[in-house]
Image (tube, rainbow, N blue to C red):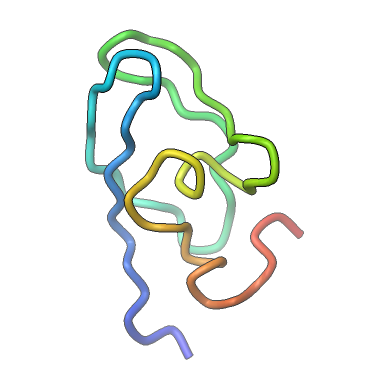
Length: 71
């Protein structure tokens, strides 16, 4: 069932536009992320479970597997 799960996502900071590729945790949400360029602490947009679902190029692994992300 875990075939074709993408573990890399590029996060784009909505404050400064800086982009960085990160490896996502396989079995958990990442609720906070600190931009390495401007040091702003990001949190998910309303309705999203994690920073990858809000600011990443790829949704988090639990969402990719059609599972609840933050259970």
